[in-house]
Length: 162
Image (spheres, one colour):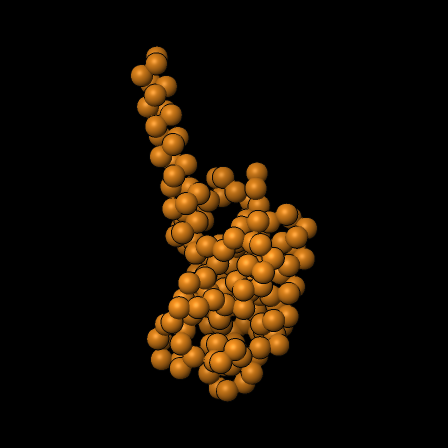
């Protein structure tokens, strides 16, 4: 079974800035077809749980209180590459809007809940290393939902043959 990296918060690990997880029920269906490798680049980079929320501001990652944590984000992204390489991971499921894991959207750097088109620090690093990056909904639609349709069609055909 193929191994896919996933943001640790999506499997329910309490690693987010607010000390909570962000479990997504699609994980259960994904686990039927893939092994998951949960990683949190922010924690791997040395940031605490909980921690001040951070956003990307002009190529740097800054906390709401003005501290530059770019070094920790870069370190965490780099440290994710070792287990990803070891497990031969080619795909990643990431938490959109995160300054580390944002796939399509990130916060606008103004700490006002506004969003802009952009990628997180880990997402950029993964793409540089030819890892396909998806939100959990994108991954589900592309690799699970279509397979379920194919399985359903195959089952219907098998019933007709009987």
